[in-house]
Image (cartoon, rainbow, N blue to C red; front, side, top):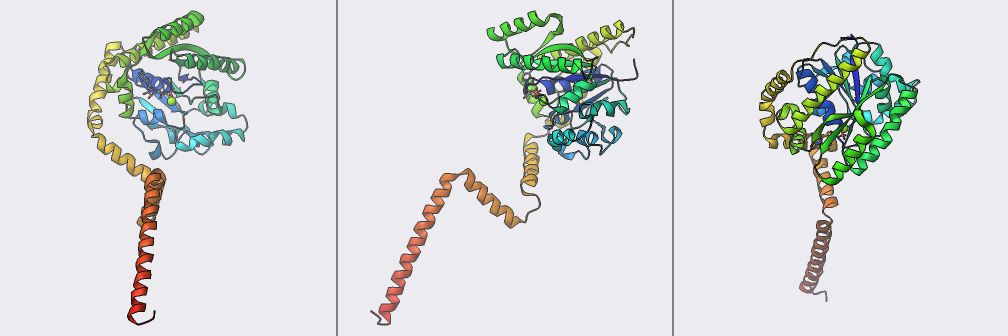
Length: 366
Ligand SMILES: Nc1ncnc2c1ncn2[C@@H]1O[C@H](COP(=O)(O)OP(=O)(O)O)[C@@H](O)[C@H]1O
Ligand SMILES: [Mg+2]
């Protein structure tokens, strides 16, 4: 294989159509098939970072630091929870990168320049793009060899596809003439009539660009996401995981075909059964983590949220803020508290006045 990695951007301007799920599952399936993989998380929400077992809040240096020149790739590249999958993680400050990059020269090619400097030694790089067409996805498309567009067969998702294709064309015409639309992948598939019609429409327009494999809707994907693991390592034999593995092999076959046209013969990946066994092994390795009582996770989430909300305030200040938050959330309680306070004040004033009268009477001041 070429010493340079094959870089693939997973992109659609719409959110919630399985970009992150596709990126992370593609990454672990490629690794299970014997490839070395680096995932670049370009979304400030850090979903693929989390899904690969890393908490963006615990990351010292992330992709933001590479973009702004504060770190080299080697300083940021970390192992994920899965063998042969490394990660250039996202940190929450990535949300502010647009402004920083807009001040920089040649900002659309920042990632290309970084990758060309070396340091990314692997077979495949998978870039999880944020939704919308900002400077980050443009950077991803500018450096990628190929782009995968996940779509769902819903009317709004169709609009997303219609907005995404021109963006790819824009990059192909200027920034990256070699960018290939490797394929369109149907995700979160439903079996209703509207979905089937939209699916047929897109297939009839885009023909062979659409992958044969379709990922079905499967609630286990959401369960896996909340456990912080890609479905392929959570329930490798579930329908969605099996479909993601099939898709990976279709992706590899397309890549091999493209390389063959350019006169390069790629080594064959491990057989599908071998990859499946590998994924099942990783599933058992993660069993302990997955079995961790969810109460623990909720408690640690609460502690983190408290740290963010309260920082290092004193217990009295925290109590004060707790009371204020309570009344903001519960207006009726606030009104009841004011009413009770008024009644108590009224009673106290009344008691005070009658007490004063009694004292006055007692000492003969009438
Ligand atoms: N095949 C599927 N079946 C059911 N839910 C899915 C499936 N694929 C993804 N999801 C869920 O859909 C939501 C959006 O997916 P995500 O990968 O985060 O999309 P994006 O990165 O495009 O915003 C997530 O909650 C994810 O768990
Ligand atoms: Mg995402």
